[in-house]
View 1 (cartoon, one colour):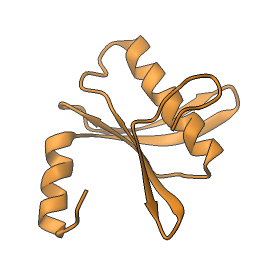
View 2 (cartoon, rainbow, N blue to C red; view 1 turned 180 degrees about the horizontal axis):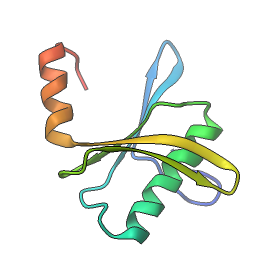
View 3 (cartoon, helix red, strand yellow; view 1 turned 45 degrees about the horizontal axis):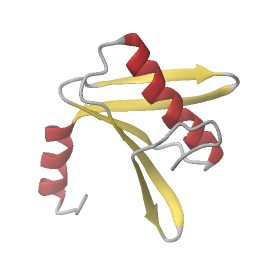
Length: 95
């Protein structure tokens, strides 16, 4: 999903014709500029699409962070991609 200001979210997950989850992939969010860019995209899209499930898949970072930007805010959950895939396998859910 691309916003009017050319920020992109990598994946939009739909269920029953509604946006269920937004996913951003950021291998190494250690650089503050990279992390902020990726979180801005998620929070902006989350606000635009009325989606609160904001997920950033990373190489190794796992945390939950509140993020605000120009009056838009949201909670971004970061988790290692391997953990996300292993949870999907144990749940029997296709990701």
